[in-house]
Image (cartoon, rainbow, N blue to C red; front, side, top):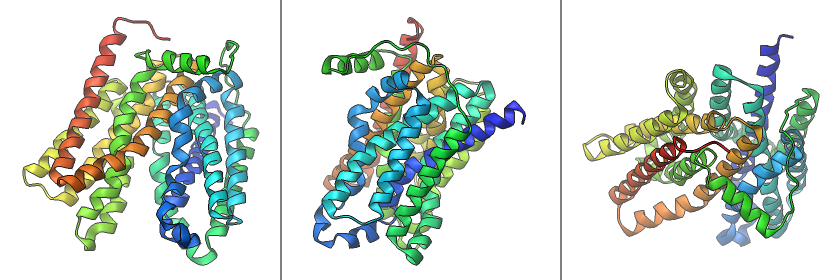
Length: 391
């Protein structure tokens, strides 16, 4: 087997691990009505089964990058897959509400381990154009998983039930862990410093991460992306006519995936990942502004998520482009996990509150301001990088 083929197989299996991690969200979000029927007496709290998985990442995301540098991304990834598989198998027994909720908290640890370790490994085993393409592929794992869960998962649930669905997910996670062992990934993370896991150390990790214009830039930009991505995906279809709502909602994330796959690798041959990110945010501003100039909402919805695909692909590619060492890359992906989970937690309540207290135009004006702020942060970080050395 030639080296390029070997690397392709390794990247594809790591991407499959990402699909398993994203399904930890999608398996609750996609069949949400069915989940509610499992616990009818907890209707007011059922949303926590979806959102509470983000809490671990929002609190410990940056620290997970430091953990990756110390225990190694391969071991951390296998741990995440085994833990996630075991939890899904437990969930397939349909435990009581509070036991299910506790399992979702623990599942957040599995999710965090996977989404930090896998892209760190991809960045280390690829180089140049292959790395750009691989990181763009990785960036699609969330959208692809949601689409697959909608297209394949829902019919599966209709035929076999939620218990079998959770069991299938658990089995696939364990099988992916086995594949990771078989492909014998080896990455040199260097000699890590000894860590003393105290509040002081955790604070130092956050300080090291977020004071670096190289490590922090992709994560801070990612926060502004996630602040609007899931929230707009949930809110905008509700503003559409009922006849087109489902089809537009399905096309929105797919548009971003397609543009990310087709355009981002090409652009990265000519410009930096940060330029691609800012181009995505800038086009997002123009696309939303088109609504105020008379463009139709369905077209704007699809076009907006298409151009946000530039932010999606560019952000994951930015981490290895800005950070050469595996340890710095692990810190970068840990920070992205932390900021992404934070954006997911805050985005929907924020935009819904604006929509309910004002109107759609005010909400979209805030989104424009969010994207403009993201561009400003990236320009500021770029200015700092010209005067600093990478970590």
